[in-house]
Length: 302
Ligand code: MLT
Ligand code: MN
Ligand code: ZN
Image (cartoon, rainbow, N blue to C red; front, side, top):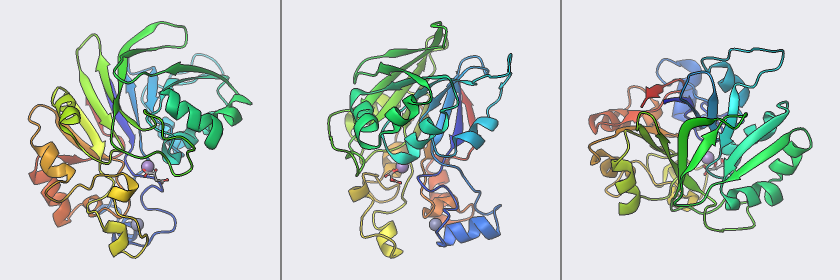
């Protein structure tokens, strides 16, 4: 299967419209030193023509223009066979409603994520007034095959993984499964990806699952726990926002660097994170530890 990183920035994108932190200023003035990025999303395909989106970002329109194999056979053609959603955060779901021109959309999500999208953000009822929605529930601990529109199997399966995190701030439920990672497998090649764009921590179960993967795409939102507090733009720490910081003795960097099998790439990177600066010491630390900083358009064949 092919996995393409469509967007590697956290909510707000990079640079963020109202941010003049060092990395956002650099991304505007010297984009070769801090490459702009769109909001967190990826796509997976086994044939390079028919794609499943992993989350649907507010930048979905420009992101779909970058997908290979958009070959149309009629006046209307959807290059997207389905959407797999890990949580109900706005940066991962506003794209659902932006795809309303599709006559029909297939969604794969947990019952908890569905409930928040039905009742709290109401993105599903709004989208339903434009397009038919077919929803397949994902169960924690179970594999679900992804099917093309006609019902044919794509050869890709997904399994949601419980991750430590709270629900979105507007959610009226904290039911299990409101925020998940995904194991994504290719039945034919055996290729395996752990896709975890948002997680407040790492435990031995999650690390064990990641060690089996060929590719790990992990939450790179913040470099340090007090990143936004130190900049004076928030009073909430990374942990309070349910994002495990990259640095520090318990950070994701030392923990992920111990995984020997998979290739490891950060995604969902907040605009304030200094790893976005190509020549920063923090970027150097990530690369010396054997990890990569995700960039829109990166593609992996597993
Ligand atoms: C998050 O990743 O914590 C959320 O997407 C925050 C937000 O609403 O932008
Ligand atoms: Mn987010
Ligand atoms: Zn910024």
